[in-house]
Length: 133
Image (cartoon, rainbow, N blue to C red; front, side):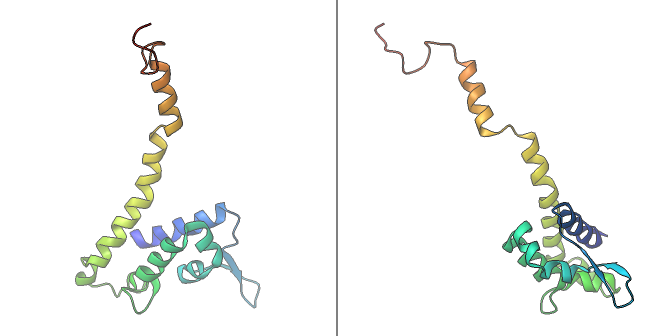
């Protein structure tokens, strides 16, 4: 269930950036691009970063890699692959992509922290005050 959600997450991020994620066939029918097509787009590398794009492509869609998306989507994922290091890694990567931005939102910016520390220090108690005055 995680891999289709990952595909939708990537699609939503691209749409939010104004990237067109649909394609139109010869009959004029619009369809969403699949994950391999989304990851192959240059805009994806620009938005997600080249290293994340490479990781997702290598883990989810490359035939020479674990190919987790294909195996999951087509019912080919067996127990050994479901519990493999590749599956655990992609689970960890998804968790990181969700938790790190939330963590960053809850942490005050460094500028705010230093401003608060300066405001909490009473005047004249700093190390710049001469000791004999």
